[in-house]
Amino acid sequence: MLTPSAERFQKIQKEALPDFQKYLVHVTKYHAAKNCKTWIVGKWITVREQKFAPPGTHFHQFVVPPVLPFRRDCTYGDLAAMRLPPDVQGLGTCEYSMERGVVHACHAGGVVHSMEGWTHNEVGAIDVDRIDIVWEAALKHGLKPVSNNTS
Figure 1 (cartoon, rainbow, N blue to C red):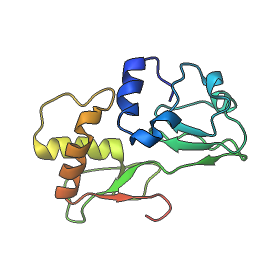
Figure 2 (cartoon, rainbow, N blue to C red; figure 1 turned 60 degrees about the vertical axis):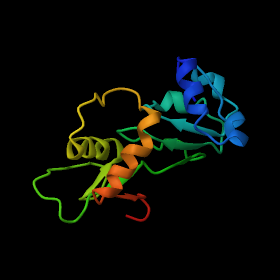
Figure 3 (cartoon, rainbow, N blue to C red; figure 1 turned 90 degrees about the vertical axis):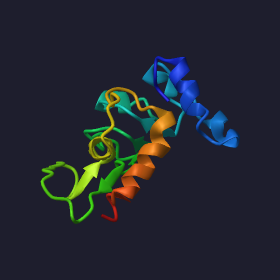
Figure 4 (tube, helix red, strand yellow; figure 1 turned 45 degrees about the vertical axis):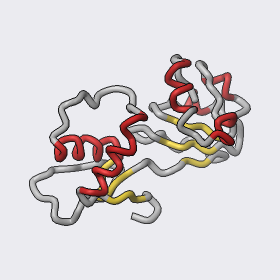
């Protein structure tokens, strides 16, 4: 996981099951991940930055816009997304990489934020302590997770 903050890395690492925490590696430069075959990408990376990954790497994406699938010797995961309930009206959405009625997970979070009437600030890093709360609220309001391969 590339982040300058050791504190943020440790907080996210603790979210993993204890047996798997050792597999999450903290790096602060792309070249430090040259031996990692699984990259968790939380911000857009350039073609040049992707070149640091070894052949056979899988890029798990949590970023908008999606990472360009430049490497033919690597694989790229779907972006996290949610399907809006069919009865939603008055909400204009247009996600250039998603079909109609499907929004990126980060945008779904904003919709849920509004529907719940929350007033805290949603900008910036994900608050891992609120993930389950937001997930349950999304399901309560009829949003459903989708995969780009099956939507």
